[in-house]
Amino acid sequence: MTSSGLHAARARGGNARQLVHELLRARIVGLELQPGTPLSENELAAELGVSRTPVRESLILLAEEGLVDVYPQLGTFVSRLREQDIASAQFVREALELAALRDGVERADQRDILELRALLAAQTDAERRRDPEAFFRLDEEFHARLMAAAGHPEAWSLVHHAKAHLDRARRLSLPLEDQLALLIRQHTDVVDAVEQRDAQGADAALRGHLRQVFADVETVRTRHPQLFGEADTPPRPRPRRESRKRSVDR
Image (tube, rainbow, N blue to C red; front, side):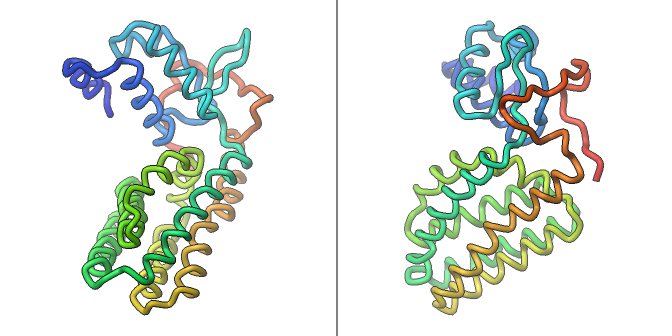
């Protein structure tokens, strides 16, 4: 949701706190607001055209999710990436997706396979265009469709909500050399195994794919150590003009 989208939603009677929370959460998870970015209630309220109250309440909710850190006498910051947060999110995702996959091997029909392969083709196109954001959206569609093929489409919302910390790390890893091609090969291995009714092969392929993030995080941490940290170590404040998303060095 954009700022203009927020205004339109408010005009339709949307709850201001919920809308601001959704907008800020999307900006954080999408890396528009990068780890360590300082957040000002006054500036956000002015930008979004709301009072400070929904902004303050939204920041409290984001702090409860671990996406925002509040340091007394210092300020509020987008939380830096923490290894434990990423590991916990990946654990939840793996547990739910692998459980669903077991049903998917038995239930998936030819239409499911064709739709999954169409998403693979679209991912390949995004890789050719060097469009990691489009690839990320298609990756989300692929995993949601895989769960739907298993007969558990509603479970994807649980996965989606649980993996915010994981998604920040995933987005940072997408520009890595040959990363998109690797993920497409892993996706293809999963679909091939599902089509062949190979439960063991599908489980191994998806498990390996989901755990790829751990190796990726180490690479990203080496390149961008300033984006990682712990909750008890506040980031160094940056000038406000740098609080917007900037491209990171590849």
